[in-house]
Image 1: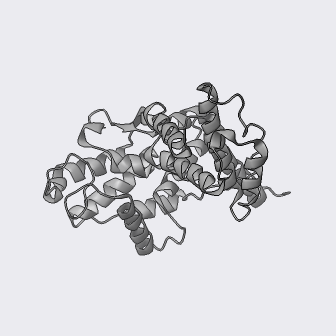
Image 2: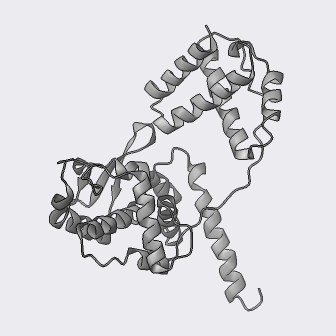
Image 3: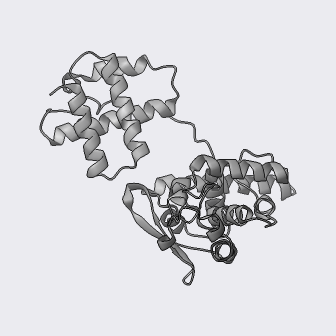
Length: 289
């Protein structure tokens, strides 16, 4: 079996059986194709030293990127190990480089209040207000938000149903501010811009599904208007949602469920944020700090 077919079968497995997102599947495919372009051998004949030499040549890349490549190789060879195409996994002894824990930036309560204070004069103002309130109220990913349809929203019960990574559905409660903004947008403004009669909740100026890039633009413009200097993205609001929950006493496992994290270790980064604030408050307020 040639390398292209080996990669294709593995990618098909990730997509159809593991239900990985399109972006994740593409990332895995790119890493394997780069390995294939460098090493002119059948991928199933590679040994640990072949992979080590290849990775050593990638010294221009970050530790995070190298660690991802190693994860891809391990998954690829485990797939063919289970298929009994190989007798051992050559990537098993590869050691992921240590990564610096980069704490995500988040907004203060004052900054959130400022950002979400939108004077509604047009249907687009109402839409933008609803988008920002929803991002902060639910912590959903931008990919999840742009894919929301009217059937995902239950305003009467104050919840949304989100299809997350791995096509796993989760139900997220919504706060009063988000419910008010969404109700106002949907009942009073959405029909004016729904030129294509789409079922998507959030619509662009052409009447079609709003894009990720457009939401980044909305947030950037609102931050400029409000004088918020931080580099704010949809992911910043997701981090802010989780951080504020933790600071107000929410259980880490509840936050994990709301964010749709598969592993609790992913959610634990927010404990670092909380501990940093704890130390800062100690230094600021304790008389003998």
